Amino acid sequence: MTGHATADRILADLATGVTAEVLAQTGQLAERLARSQRIFCYGVGREGLMMKAIAMRLFHLGLDTHVIGDMTVPPIAEGDTLLISAGPGDFATVAALASTARAQAATICCFTAQPGGPLPKLADLTITLPAQTMADDQTAPASILPMGSLYEALLFLFGEALILDLRDRLGQSAETMRARHTNLE
Image (cartoon, rainbow, N blue to C red):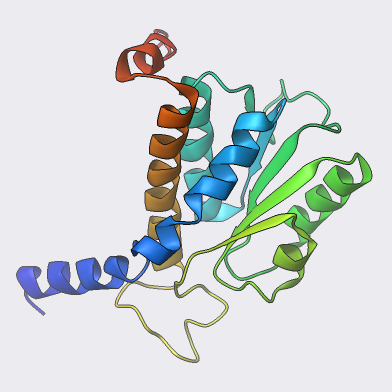
């Protein structure tokens, strides 16, 4: 496959997950996150990297945001939101965190490609990203991208759309966001 053909195929795969219907899910999630006292983000593997990217931008918007696993994460409590990713619908570590959040009366919001999975069913709000994950990449590969790469890329893109919604909702600007960017790089 030539470079252009590969690029065209990747872009076609991505287009299925950035439709108006999929992006319409940003509003309800943005509303919940804007009302949260604190936001705790988590995902495993490459999904975890995308969740860190989302957490960084939530912080730039001025929201009290934490990445689970960092040493400075406070305890989760009522009024807080656990924002998790479970592309294939279930991960043991994510399930354990969701159980703790539920016990503390925190809101659980879950990104997934498998809305029928155990974690999405546990969530207060599920955001469905239509993508191949490792749950189905061997049975019915729909993407040229390997394993869960399509889901992970769509998680990043959806996160950017979410940030744009929240930016407008919170009355933030590029300048106010930039002012919160670290100067310790």
